[in-house]
Structures are given as structure tokens and as C-alpha cells.
Image 1 (cartoon, rainbow, N blue to C red):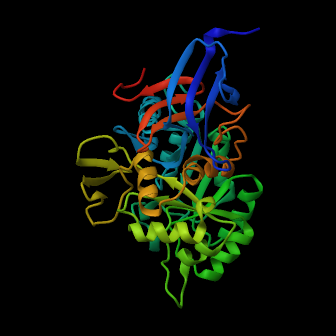
Image 2: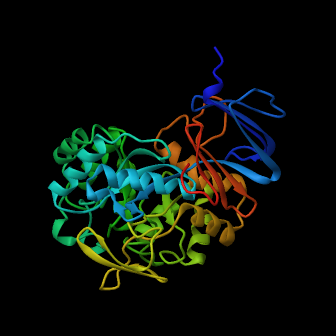
Length: 393
């Protein structure tokens, strides 16, 4: 039976997918799913959005696989309110799905965060919490960055298994330094379980990275940052992950964590299919400059970025909207390539078969953008949850 109460027709927009040539068409949505994609659709709907042809783009909603916080809240706050506030703020930048990212802390603090996430249920007007990215504590003290050294430990499959159970099997990704004692076996075990193993905060040599990739590493956490750098006689982690076709690299395209030329280099070497845009944002995103907390550490947020008192970078205040614009500016990549880097690659890594594409049967998580890549509307599960010049509906 046809139900008008949960239907939406988006007409006359330029539809962009990672694997197709953009075209002007319509999208009919019912009960949170894309039912039809075509030209001149005349299906009756409860709500209509009339586009502007080539001037309005329809992208799959952005997926942020690495974000700690936003709008004054952090995943490590271990509160339902924090998660809801993060989820509701992210739709303003076009994010329709994200991984709540933990950080190196005392085991009990991590467990509290995981247990909170296990019981989280999205509300209306929110980006979907797709799972957890556990960053640390199995990382190298030599490449700590903003991860507190005091809580860093060796990889433990037993501990991870207990954490996965505590999270209600919501851990989708883990950042680990595979060169640590027991690291290679840990990588192999988690890869078999279907967890995305990402090398990060690592001082591994080239040969160790190659061994880790053979064991199951499939991603690199915030490329260039807190990993053994490239040298022409010692390629390090940076060189290794750039040439390993099996590894996708996260990029924080804020031009603070990576020089524009470094972003362009990654694009030229990996191609759009090998890059995942992330924010690595902390709680100060969307707020004024000042001092904020990150895992018990004071972070100074200024126009030059988020830094610890010792000068180390401590996440970002980048939005996915700005990351996409910056990537376009520095690489002049195509619109389908932007879709790959902002949603499709992440969906494929996470093995979500109904996300990251605008097609029949896919989730109705889409965003409308103008020709300058500004977010006009964000639609989650078929509902308009953000409109430009309007806070959440």
C-alpha cells in the first residue's frame, strides 16, 4: 500500500555517484529508502524538493570515520547527551553517518565510553552513529601526538574481545601500531573478525608495515601525522602506505595537519579510490577559539589549529564540508572523486552495502549542495534534518 506520510521527491538536481557520470534527474524516497532514480519522476509524495538543475548537486551523505567530538562534546564523555549533541551538530556539515572515536585512556574510561555507545539510539534530526573507531591504546610512545603515553599498552586480543562485547559489537575500526609486541598476531586476529585495522601512531619500518598489510592492515590513520615519516632511504610508514594498494589512507584536509602539496601528493599517488576524508575533530568544533579538554589534557584552539601546550596537534576543528572544498581546491578532482573520498570509500571499508551511493534500494542519506559545495540540505533516512540558514528542523 502506498503511504504518502513517509515519502519525498527530489526533482531537477545533478545526481553524483563515485562510479557514474553526473546527470540531472529525480530521486523518489519512501520510508528512508531510495525507491526510484530517474528523469521526470511524477510520483506523489508528502514532501517535494525542487532543485536547480546543474546548480544543485545531490551527493551521498558524508561519512566521517574518525571524529572524537563536536559542539562541546566528546565520545569519551561517556554520556548519551554527548553522543546526541555530536550527532545533531554533524548534520549541519553534511555528515549523515560517523564512527564515534575513542582515544588512549585508562581502560575503565574506554570501557565507559564503549558501554555508553552500546546503548545509544539515534534520535530524529541526527547523523547516524555507525559504530566505534578505537584509536589506541595499542600505539607507539614514539609517535604519541595527543594520545597520553601513560595509558599506552601492548595489543591484547583478550582485552579487545571484552571491549567488543561491551560495545555490543559496534567497534568497526581500530588504530594500532603493529610493530608492538604481539602486534602482528593482533592485526591478523582482528582482520579475521571483520574489524578495519588501521595503522597509526606507529614507528614501524617499511618491512614491518609490509608484514602488517599481509596480516590485514587495510587503512592508515591520519596520513603523515604521528607515523614514521618518509625518507628516500627509509620510506617509513608514510612511504609504505602510499604504495600499498590494499591500504586506504585517511586525510585531514585542513591544511594544518597536511600541507596542500602533501594532500595533492597523496591524491596523485593513491587516487581518489585510495583516500578517505576525515575530520579527526575534537569537542571545540563549531565553537569559539579558547581552551578545551581532550582526554584530561588542555587543548588551545586558535586560528592555527588545536594544540597541546607542548605544541603537538590535538585533533582538529575541521568540518567535512570544508574538507571536501579543500580537496577540490587543491586537486581539482572530479565530483565523482569527491563522492568516493567523502562517502563511498568509507561505506565500502565498513561493508555497508546500502550506503555511499544514490541508487534504488540504498539508504536515503543524501545531501544537496550548491555549485560551490556549500551544504543546502541534509537528508538522513529520508528526512530533511538540516536546511541552510536554519538549525535542525
